[in-house]
Amino acid sequence: MSQPLVEVKKLKKYFPIKKGIFGRTVNFVRAVDGLDFEILEGETLGLVGESGCGKSTTGRTILQLLEPTEGQVIFEGKNIVEMSKRELQQIRKDIQIVFQDPYASIDPRLTVRDVIAEPLEIHKMYTGKEKNKRINELLNDVGLSSYHANRYAHEFSGGQRQRIGIARALALNPRLIVADEPVSALDVSIQSQVITLLQDLQEKYNLTYLFIAHDLSVVKHISDRLGVMYLGKIVEIGDKGTIYNEPLHPYTKSLLSAVPVPDPTVKRERIVLKGDIPSPSNPPAGCTFHPRCSECMEICKTEVPSLKEVNGRLVACHLYN
Ligand code: SF4
Image (cartoon, rainbow, N blue to C red; front, top):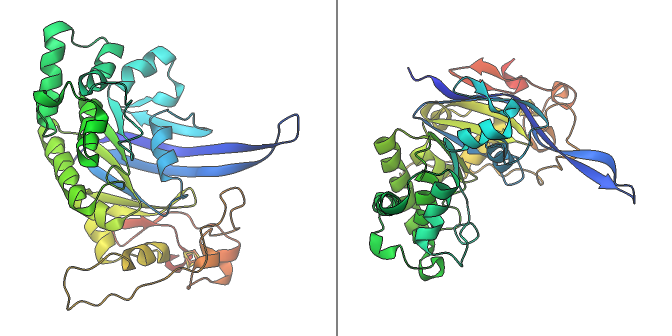
């Protein structure tokens, strides 16, 4: 069995809400509120939930693009939260990100060659001919060619720009890639091509992915395991097949009910949630999902459910006490 490459322990990221001329902190947005999970070497962990549930903040906090408020991120046995800037710079080679919006994540003034060369230059990897060879290799890996290297990002389609973003993320031979909604901005026909590319690259380079998405049908194809987030917490996590075949948490059930079933003989009843996701600056007491849950009990309004093992996965819900 694979070893954990990343262990996230009690991770929190709170953003202060400031008011008045002295900028006094009056409250916090609890974007990530105590996460515990592992990502195994070579696997894809899908992280899903509605927008505003904290999944992108989780990815950025793991990468240390955002400083955690509390908790640990253990990468290959070392807590990267406590690392010096220099140590962090070294570890950044191993952990890369693919952003949601390929349009916004590529500087329009740079050629594709410059975009891919940037991380190589920052980390002083490859120079001269070797650098050009590496750039051409990366372009081939993502289904482009050396012919594209001297062109600018605006000359490419959305799918091609995402391929450039993936080439840049691959440049330093990373171990972990945080893919933050990497196909959400793309047409459906292009989405599957980019997902297939990510799968091929994972096999070729033994990559580990944290794949963040709001759409469960996208995550279904690429994930080995699935984590479902609601208001900064994981409410269910486990093997993809286990969760897709028998979701236990009422929130997971509602998300899955919206995923189209390819078999026309199978009818799935759509569960429509009441209301919007509450504000993470003022989360409901007890189970934060209780105001929207059709199975809410009295205990749910006061007691926070903890993650417990039920039928081969972890779930945080009083229905399974
Ligand atoms: Fe619903 Fe209660 Fe379970 Fe929360 S703990 S999901 S409110 S049944």
